[in-house]
Image (cartoon, rainbow, N blue to C red; front, side, top):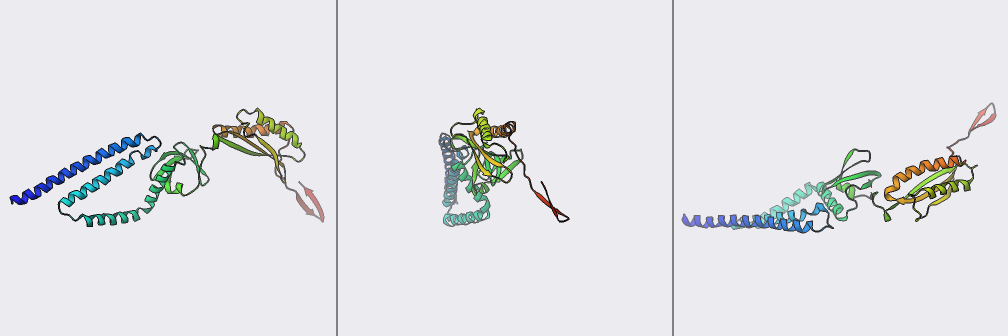
Length: 271
């Protein structure tokens, strides 16, 4: 009896010591990796605590296996069982894991950051948070949205908050009547571009006739401005160009159709 107690008593004490050592080692490694990650400023803050937690879980799993091995448990079959269980869980959570994989890709490549305006499938969202499963944001008019990461990573992402050289182009088309003087209209639009301080000189504005439409001569008004000034400048220019063309004697036509009426064998034309 004494030998039995001595034998298993030593095993229990050894198991307890192994558990304590594994637990302390896991916590120490977790804190050590967290401090190292926090000093890496190029890594997204969302990643800072993930490696430490992964290492902690791995150490605790190996500690548990070592404890079971002290009591004579066949750990080989246990590892195989855990592998099969992990495979089954992975298949059951396939959709969730795809979101996690996409979330990791988003956090690694960082196509956008919190506060950016992002266009996905023609809809613009303002990003509020980034996570491993979903990104949360809101529409420009206010409503909240929850976007699964797999829906984001699987399509073209247009980040409207970041542009090449931090500038953005304004493209507008203005139509004038066929009876108006084209040179006069070009001069008016050119003067408006020259008087607007938010319009850049490089690249230079492009104001040219682009097409002869059914009802109007179409003039392209293409200018560049800084990214932050783009929206306000665009709205101001639409009003200013319309008023400038009208004050300069140009007519902005509207679509017209000719209707032929046949009455008593006579054809009458009405505009």
